[in-house]
Image 1 (spheres, rainbow, N blue to C red):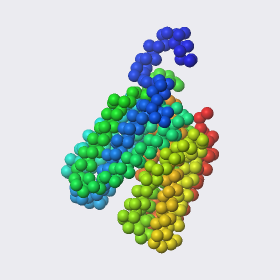
Image 2 (image 1 turned 45 degrees about the vertical axis):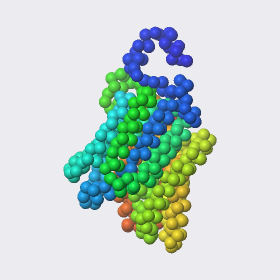
Image 3 (image 1 turned 180 degrees about the vertical axis):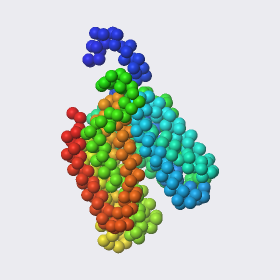
Image 4 (image 1 turned 45 degrees about the horizontal axis):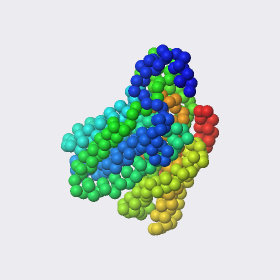
Length: 433
């Protein structure tokens, strides 16, 4: 209403607005009546479908270590280096992808990211020399992870605050559904021809880009300048705002603490299971139940999302994650099926916590962010994940070897409970009104 009044009182303002943001769609296309299933916009569902398709083809990363050692003849040390370089490429992807999403737009950043990662995936599949594989890995990691911040920002652009946790929860559900399907098919495809995995991954990534190209308009809101025009257009302007937002930085640091504990399910949990006598097949089954529990449980949890705030969901998720991780300490107190049952129940608990954290965290980031800085804020939060994944393997393995499994899992419980308490204190006080 106030915008219409401004245009009527001052017609000269209209050309200036268009010059600043010529291609921008409304900040929320729900206002245009473009509603899809579950009351979410059709633009959101195009993003959702594109991500689901992309994850359906993401089999190669589950078997990359096996491919590099068996097909390319790399040593375990070199294989570890390649995978580490891939992860290192993602360290810069979050901040730079977020800045690009704010300065250039969500749509072009997603298009460049999907095109680049698809081409580089094919290049990695056809690479034969160790030098080429080592060179491609970090660049592929960068382009793959550069799509995350603009995707999260675009969801916040087209979904109103009250529905964001539900929208992010559905997106996370699609990611896990695609992962579960990819995991079930990957082994069979690899046995037939490993190269097919690279081709399928590239094609589904290109398909994701087609969804963006044909079904997603630019969603970036018009820029809001808080200082001079020169300051707003400065190269670091998009990234400096999150760095100077103290409440948001505290939130990111608390999340990093929580993630250091959560990532142990990927790193040290399989080692602990093997130490308690579980075979490879049973370990794979137990870890795979995480995706099954999410696919089944997330739709049930989404029904309750509107009853609670984003912060309440985050705190509850942190506590459940901690209890689930801490429960692993009981696995060594019995023999045989007892340990398997403990791991099963623990997986159910920390998966339930994961559902709460994954649905609420990006919604809270969107709440902290000014509309035209959502990419930079989501990119900063993505950096917390990258740092946690870089530090957690060393920290968790060190505690497991030096102090034992009970100390590791009870330590994870303490860290998660501390994160929940800090969120209740610091994040609650720092939330934007």
